Amino acid sequence: MVVPAAPKIDPQTGKVPTAKLTADVEVGVLHDDNIFLSAKDPKSDTVIRVSPSISYAKGDPSKDSTEGAYVRVGYKPSAIFYMKNSGDDRVDHQAGIDAGWHGQSAAIDYSGGLQRLSDATA
Image (cartoon, rainbow, N blue to C red):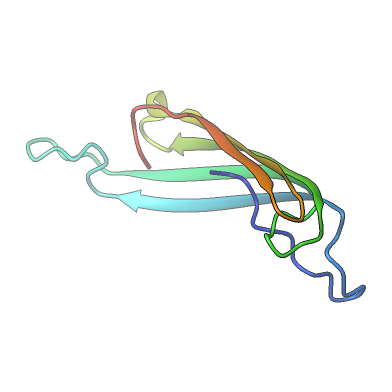
C-alpha cells in the first residue's frame, strides 16, 4: 500500500505538521538470466522499474494525538521496461487512503487501497 507512515515531529518546530505533501521516485535495474522461469528455454533480460509516488497527509493518526480528524492518501504507478522483451512492458498502479477521527473516548478509523497489477512480476 502507498499510504505514507504517520507524520513525524518537525525538528525545527517540535510539532507534528498539520499537512504534508510528499513526492518521491524509485528507480531500479535488474538483470535476470531466466525472466520467464523456463527450464527448457531460458531467456535473459534487463528490467528497469521507475516508480514515482505522491502522497498527502493532514492531521495526526496516532492514538495519543489530540482529538481531531486525519487523512492520508497516496498514489504510486510503477512502469516496468524490458530491454529485449518490450512486449512485456507494463504499468502497475497502487493507491491508498487512511482516514479517521479520534475523540477523548472513541475513535473511527478507515484504511483502504486499490491495486491494478499485471500478470507478470518484476
